[in-house]
Image (cartoon, rainbow, N blue to C red; front, side, top):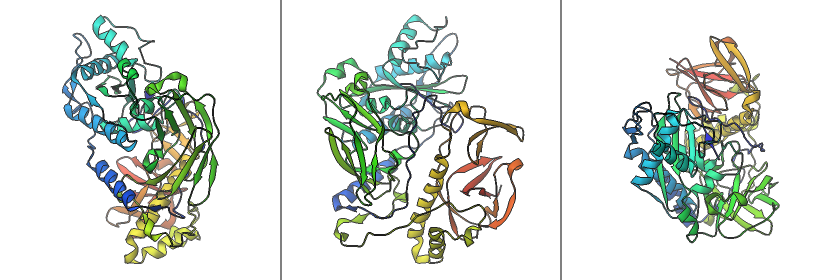
Amino acid sequence: MNFTKKATTFLVAITLTATSCIAIATNTQAATFTKDEIQEVHQVQNQYAKLPKQSFNSGNLYASTPHLTTPFSPGSVTNSYVNSQLDYINFYRSIFDLPSISANKTDNDNAQITASVMAAINANPFTNQHGLPNETKPAFISSTYWTIAKSVSASSNLNFNVTNQSAGDVITDLLTDTYNLDGSDTGHRAWLLSSRLTTTGIGAAYGTNNYRYSVQQVAYPSDGYKAASKSSVAYPNSGIFPIELLKGNNIAWSLYLSDKTISGTPKITVTDLDTGQVSQATNVNNFGNKGFGFFKTILTYFPGDIKLVSGHEYSVNIDNVYQYSFKLFNQVAANQPKLENSKDNNQNKNKTENSNTVSSSQNINDTKDRTTRTILKQANDPDSATTIKSALLLQGEELRDSLNKKRRMNPAIFGRSYQDGYSYYSLGEDQWFHNFYIFNNPDLTAGVVNIDQHSLDSNIYTSPYPSLRKQTSNHVISGKSYAYGQTITVNHTIWYYLGKKQWIRQFN
């Protein structure tokens, strides 16, 4: 159940389960939301907006800096780090209607000892570190500290990374469980969403290898004897659910049953109730024998090629086990397309739009793609600013997802080249990054860029990298907005991906 991150701004995992890519599609139709559901959406969005977003690094993580050689001292992290992580844990648990949990000094101290021991020995982030089975105690670490580290690491969610994440980002990664070294068992998620969990311990420390070793203790034997707060926990949860928690590669869906044991792997169907699209789940597994989160049944699966759209409603049918529905929304309020109120039920919802990647041979302004032309036409109408923003954002998400579909997920097959004095790693078609620690695909963030002639170069280039870069005859127009599927920073300059061999850049 090791969870690992590696790279300056990049995520890492050694073993990833193959899965169908989930397309985030243009909003073709929309479910209706009741007044109470819309109010709940706003409540969750407000709660998320108030969560602390501070990034932590070796300079601001500690209240007392660890000493990781002789004499060994585990130090301590700041209260803001502990409280931030706990805030995110309880925010996510509230989405699943689970009671909040607490942390205490003893467990925090033990988690900090564990994190500092792993940091002191630069524990290998790509092997199982639960119980430190492959590590040797150095002489400068006492037997007491080593025993604590072995015991606590065996009962904790572990996260290793070299990014300056926020405390909440660590929890988000554990919840989505995208980079679980053990594959798709969703063990970290099961412990975070355990219906019997009541407390936790939190610690973190940096090794000399620049990894931040994060420890979140979760498996307390006494909790296993407590009554479950819920009989079942589904991911995504029934009711309303944030689409952000389903975006990305290798995010398995799951169903946990607290007290009921299901044998075998049932057939699972996911249906978009607004478009009628039906998808058969793939990679269905039953990990109930592992006991994560003290659950009796742990079913995990990937939803196939179902298109996920904010504002749509979906049903999940797990044959002879469980059936439910949920509606998607954006937890970031600024990204939320308008939700259709149930009082507008009679409105015609038979809209169809298909957004395609703009061909590299076309000037974006002259493209024949119908959706792009519609967006450009609307952009000239100042009254359609909100509509345009949502449409462009959706188009950017489709650009991002088109890249995700072509990405290599096994680090052993990454291509390498040497350009401009740096080692480059090929992460997929037209996707090159460089950094000493790169072993896996970085996150791709879609968005909308507003063209300002004072801050952005209007020329379109074939690549952000000097040795691959050629200026095309195409350009973007000042005052207009464009969707992008990812950004890359090269020599302190931010580049935006608008389509195949179409990049624009900020001025230095």
